[in-house]
Each structure stands twice: as structure tokens, then as C-alpha cells.
Amino acid sequence: MSSTVIGAGITIEGEIFADEEVVVQGVVRGKLSSKEAITVEHGALVEADVDGGSFAVSGTITGNISSTDRVDLLSGSRVVGNVRAGRITIADGAQFKGNVDMDV
Image (cartoon, rainbow, N blue to C red; front, top):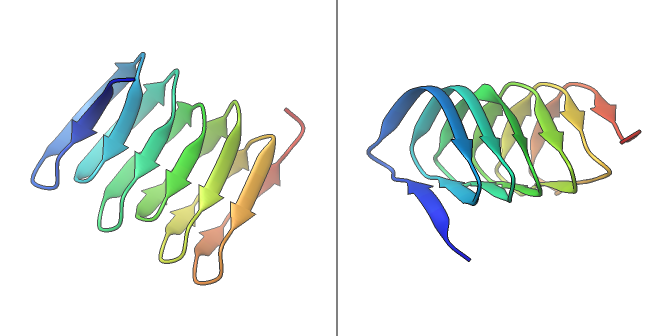
């Protein structure tokens, strides 16, 4: 399985649509949508509404998350926005401010 990596030194502003997994190590502002998994690594910043399969978040997301599978907020993550997913886990040490909708 291939993936798209947005590296630590990269900032993208606009809309991103992907058919494969997306790994964010840098900064994304605007909209991010993938048919597969989205990973937001520690130190990464996403200021966008995001839609995708499963999510693994250890960085920061400011925006709404819509998942067709599950959202895992890992220790050290910070999410400000609403989450819509069939399953969600919030690890000890994660910060979350928003609403959860599990009626998917």
C-alpha cells in the first residue's frame, strides 16, 4: 500500500484529495480528504476539516474530523473540533475539545 507523506518542513494551503494513505508531518491548512487512513504525527499541525478512513492523531488538528472507520487520539495529541466516527479512542494525555457523533 502506498502513502503520501507531507514532510516536516512542508506547509500546504488548499484542498488535498487522496486515494491512498496520507501521513502529515508538516502543516496543512484548508481541507484534507482521503479514501484511506490519515496519520497526523507528533509535531504536525492540521488546520482543516478532514475526512478519511481511520485516523491516528498524535499531532494537532483544529477542524472537524469525519471517519468511515475509527479515530485514535494518541497521547500528546490535541484536537479542537467535532469528531464523527464509528469508534473513537482518547488516550491518557490527549487533549480534546468538541463533540463526538458515533451514529455513522
